[in-house]
Amino acid sequence: MISELPGATSIGSAFGPFRFNQPVRRRIMGRWRILLLASPVLAVVLVVIGLGVAMEVRGVPGLAVIVLFLTLAFGLNNAARRFVDRKMRQEWQARGAPTQTVMTVSVRTDGLLVESAVGTVRFHWPFISELMPVKDCWILFVPVSALAIRRASFHSEAEERAFLEAVLGHLEPSARARSARAEAVMAGLPSSN
Image (cartoon, rainbow, N blue to C red; front, side):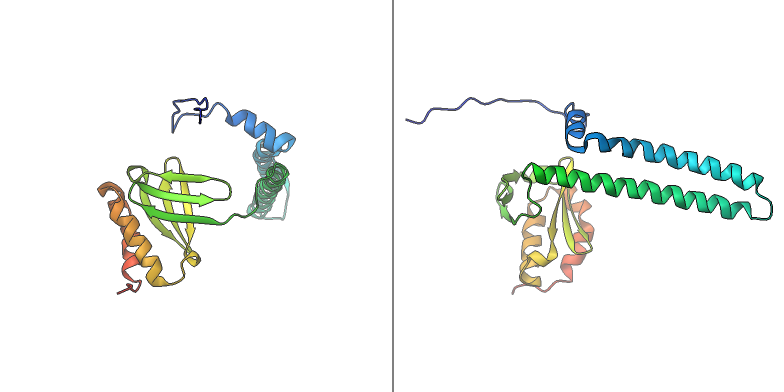
């Protein structure tokens, strides 16, 4: 006999602040998260120092000094972000998060089914708000997130067009109106007929 396992029903706000973000950030980013806070402050300090130096230095154009300090501040900020991103990836990998996973996206009558080794998710059609082409991907906007499907995932342009027609055919009218660029790109793809 199969017994029903206990579960939980929770109500969450799609746009409100998640109460668990702070502990997750603390746990995954660790002490390195301070760099994300400190680097913009340090960048402002460098700009102020640059302005002061530009006013005091004789014979050197002040704009050159300001640009030098702005470049230094921008580079420092980007370096800190890259460093923290790398540390976060390492932390997720230490927890067993895969660096890559094969994902299968299927058009179903009740929604878009996304399956991978990590799990299975179904996005119901009313909650897919747009299909947008971006360089080598198709982006599907889902509640408070986006799903990227690489164009290289399709075996042919005809297969890609068939997938797009199926997705666009299921979207709500407002979502389809927002997806005008996708329809324009799709029109340039050969059909399977």
